[in-house]
Image (cartoon, rainbow, N blue to C red; front, side, top):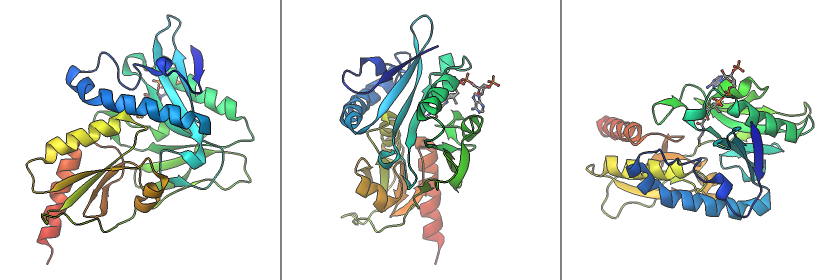
Length: 268
Ligand SMILES: CC(C)(COP(=O)(O)OP(=O)(O)OC[C@H]1O[C@@H](n2cnc3c(N)ncnc32)[C@H](O)[C@@H]1OP(=O)(O)O)[C@@H](O)C(=O)NCCC(=O)NCCS
């Protein structure tokens, strides 16, 4: 396993990882613009300290990546603490179980060294779009990262020199959104340029809700002020209530929105 670091410039080394040529054509059509948006975002962020390590196999195939930033620039709703934050660890499913995930995480931990902190937002029991473990906390715990905060299944993990307080999760906030001119419930889908899958989530939510009497809006959380306002970077708010606090499938979101609106309507 070879690890190659990207620190800015040409993003060619990062192609075909978030979205793979074997992914279904319909998905690729929707997601390609979001992948381009991610690449532009990476180039913008690199001068501020973002870097990505890519694992390649002995035959040169790319197996996965890990993306890190100084924690102040984390693509997740965290605050405080110091050191490095892992925005994403991703091993292509066709290469899982071959040590790429471990090699990438160990690379980051070695690079940080014992005197510097590393944090990651992981999940317990959540399925990635319903079918595989999404940033599994159990995997990161194996490498010595320990829980410092949690909100339901979202678990903030941290490894650092003992004296320093770890980071905290922001609290998802209820807000009052700009009302819909038509008086419909407002469904806000929070996405960021960091992950093209957030774009896919938005697309699926719009499709899934198109027959319902709701107004769907997209909210970009690229702006840190927006993250502080919502206390979230990815998820779905209904009439300002943070109903889904992570990436989710369109199907899951639609079900939750319907249940939520029905429950609210039933309340006196
Ligand atoms: C979790 C993940 C990184 C593991 O990568 P991998 O290359 O298959 O893992 P490795 O082969 O390096 O496994 C290393 C060890 O961790 C274990 N492991 C693998 N997946 C695990 C999991 N989900 N939970 C706990 N342990 C796990 C392996 O069994 C192995 O144990 P061993 O050393 O005792 O044999 C990978 O499955 C992945 O990318 N999942 C999706 C993550 C995600 O949601 N990313 C966000 C996308 S934006």
